Image 1 (tube, one colour):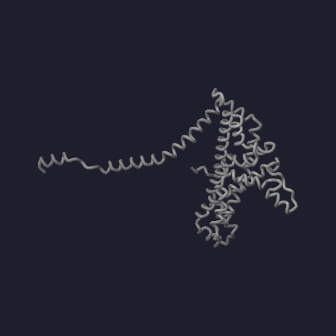
Image 2: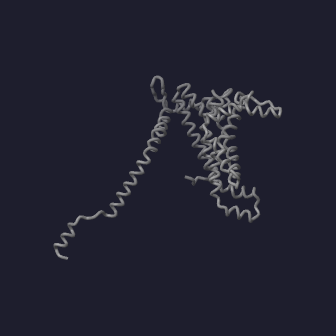
Image 3: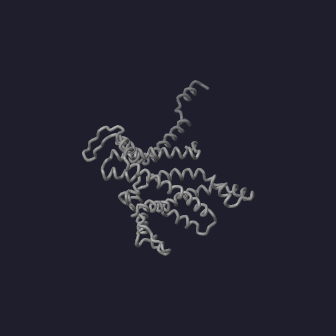
Length: 314
């Protein structure tokens, strides 16, 4: 190679390097990802992040919403909340509602999912009918059930009258008000649980059922020995979601049993928070109650993970 050729080769403009193209392509992909995530991030920060931080801040202050003044309170609001009998009564009502709503709805959802996972004619229509209450507005459903619970013209007491039974006043009776809300909530919450269980059932290998059948296992034994153990992850997920949802319930109590129900028999934790914030305009107490509810739910979730042996679940 002559000196002139070497000079021309050295001064020739270099083409785009493969590494540079890859870096540029990676930058463009990241930029596109950030742009697509931006609306969700804005929503997360504006509607969840900022209100959450504001709740923790207000819980540590005495905030007068009418005067617009704010003073430091420390833990005074939490002491006041935890020393109020009404808050503990609402906590007890929430626990009672959760205790009867979550396991019963989960058990019914498992049975319905197993039945609708078989070769049943028009099973798509049945699945839709079971799931429909979940996507229907809670207020609309509560209004329908309010008519069904009506003492004189309601459907339930009318059916009970066929058997010579005089039905109670339901939502107007302190002894039956909580039961009325629980029954309605179980009926409304079955649909989502059924769909989750149905998806989990369809992921179970059919070979397990064939092996159990060859071993002579009956249908009940196959359900207990194969289906239920394989539904463990789905059951844990449904349990946690249902637990959180039951502690955040509000609409059906507000519509069916306004003002906390007869003799405060259906006053739950969320309704106490609502009364503090929007009836007494005590935002600091409402924020402290919300933080207590958050800590309570966090503790229940951790306990649920421990009891289910699922500490490895992310």
